[in-house]
Length: 419
Image (tube, rainbow, N blue to C red; front, side):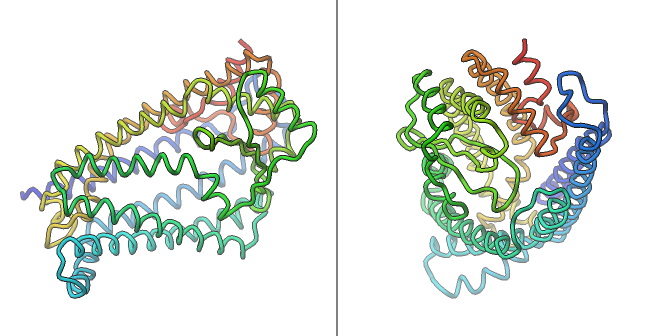
């Protein structure tokens, strides 16, 4: 049996294992639907609303099941029948006729290849997103978006993804074609710089393409936020409200940016659902993340895991067997990249689990910061309200929490806050 055949078998095996793992986890979670609500969570749902929450969870589970099965079948067909290699052969001839420069040929071919794959993926995702928005979310009273806005968002998202993909892929592919021996470290550096740039300017550059952000107006809420920030010695100049209600009733708040570009963004739905004191408690939690340097620590962890990924990628990506396993006839950077993406998935899964374990620890620490500043009752009240308004599953299965949840469950957080 050839090396390329063994690699193809491994790729398909990893895809199957990932699919089975996900279905087992979400199946266990679905099995626990309808469990009695524990004492710590009493009062979040009355009998009628609890039934509505159960119906919502079951509907989301069924949609996720259909979506994952379809994606699984498409992946098996694409890899099993060598469709990626076929696409490479279709694009290769015209690209080679456009230029004689070998470096430019590699860049153009890789960029075009990934653009086609990205567009196909985006188009295949639209039916699930459309049904989820205008059927499932609409049925349970969450959707506020119009169909016109949905299609505008789709177009904007695709164009933005294409621009970013062309920029990053062009640089990374140029490094691979021009400086192969330094590919892993230089490509890692490019990705790290891009990651820091997005973290710093996401709210300034990306969010305005989809939502309006306006400074929080003067009044009781702003006064309470500024008073708390001053109390904990947190310099805060930028507090913004985002018009999330034009798409959904789901509420949130987040802390974004680094250094002088940091800002707090409140969803307008959050302001309508919580009292000023509860909102301050939510922000106390977010400020706790900043005070404990969680964002920087997670950034460094991400950089370290990316460095490992690029090191392994640099060792293997030039192997012609990877391209043959993908159905290609000529060694190609983009074919090797996709193949290694699948072969690296077991390591990626382990890193993801460890990252979630650490993230849950950080969430407890941020809650403890809010508690140390006398905000535990308000934070508990806010978390309960947000769970009720979003029809959250109050008792997800422990296995699903362990593998996928970056936050502890509501029950776990309340027990810690009351301890």
